[in-house]
Image (cartoon, each protein chain N blue to C red):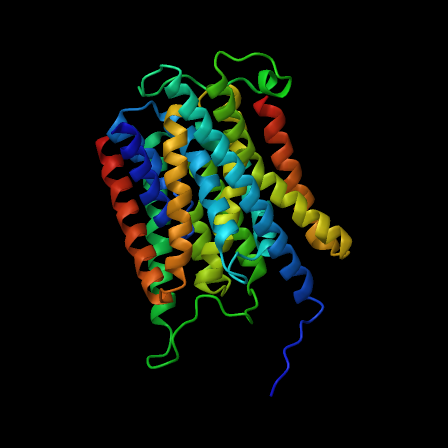
Length: 125
Length: 258
């Protein structure tokens, strides 16, 4: 009978995969839920399903809870934003684990990718 | 009816995008512009959210050991991002016909090399596993250079680049095909996230289009995750080669009509 051991290199990778899976599941379902409720609210409030409809609510308006033209539109916009933030959350999570395991090279690569993402969020404001 | 059609298009893009590691944007943009006559900016904005949904669906539902290699993804993504930045800056210097021919050439070269790589396996050898546990990436220097070049082509053409990343990982770096597609799905999610806020800030994202499409894409990606567990590497490889040839041919024909 052979016993299966985890090598020290394998353990953090498995831990990271498990955590990424949980975060991806929770955030994507929350984002899709908000988007779905938002669309239902838009349709219930009397708007017909005509493309392309109205654009998303501006980021500043959402972040500072300023009133939007409709609650449904604000909910759907929040869902889209949440889903859009997921890749950044995944990179942050990976980075956090690399820092804890002192994997300097992966920390460096992850930091560069994270900076690129943060810059794009800054330019998107 | 329109919402159902959007959902169906999303479902198809999600299945193909997740199976082949392409994200799905390459199917969504032409379908949204051709079927719904949406302006290209709205189609691209929708497709970026869709690509993130594909990436999320694969990450959330992939069985343990099949979620992609995060460390490899971040290393290659750094080179890709640098290349994409250069490509984006150079894009204005080329005319549309040159870009279309470049896209076609890259697609044909990727198809040819992926096909050759599959044929090189010994006849009668054991079935090629999609997700072996004991692989080791090779040719890092060539892989990183090629990833930078893929990023440049992505930046020049305004596409995610999954169709170049998978052949690079599989054919050049000896990454197993299943791991390459899952890793590419992780990477295209990051690439799409880098652009989606720009489109959001410009007001090019429309919930009425995005919501049904994204729900379809997410479900399609989840279906693909389960399908991939029952597929052989050869089927995925042949589908990838076929799709690359189709894309290349479409781009060549488009370049002639310009």
